[in-house]
Length: 275
Image (cartoon, rainbow, N blue to C red; front, side, top):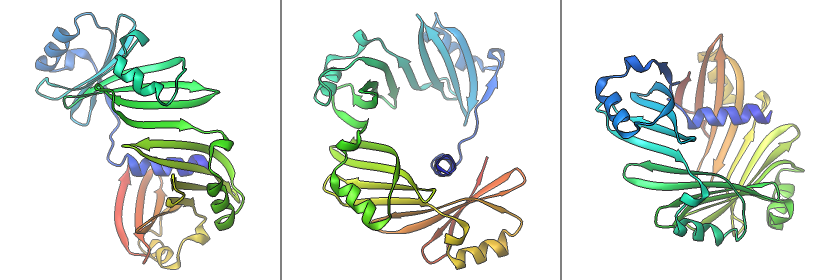
């Protein structure tokens, strides 16, 4: 169940994303190829892809992975590269050490896009992932870490028990963005996935749950039975936040998929064909 719900949410987040098409280097326009070869003359294991109008090239330089995206004028719009520990700026390391004084680096990337540079740092402590996104001035932009059960505040467990029942926990995560912290806990209740998001002060800010067919409101089912009667319901979720609630229904007909979004009144507000 959880994998299916995760898949539906990813489709909603990645709507419009077209799979990259592999192309031979000889078919890359000269203006793009020249820019790449001048900038990365020692590149090895080069792989070209055409993706959403841009050219994406993956390669290695001195045994380090790189990924570059170029537009149709040959301008580099994004560059992502692996880093050794010694290449991480001291300001970035100082920001990390405020959250984790001692760590063994697992992966580090430098990402440059639209004139901004961000360092993405990953490592584990006690088998729990820690992820950092920090700008070149050492400012912490985003932070994510997996939690032990004891690190989740008691008010979260009490809320879940009192409103939804016993949760078979899958993930316990704390995220921090622009100084604001959020707890995310998810898992199964009666074999259906539930996701809960809380502020640090205990206010629930988002709730997502997987639905069975008989949990879908009658008005929405009527629309499905009338306008999409040849489609099979593959997944359904309810998303609630502080201001609104939405039902996301994924349908399938042969190899065709469509995701419909309804508001609380049962009105269809969005329809997306999925690749």
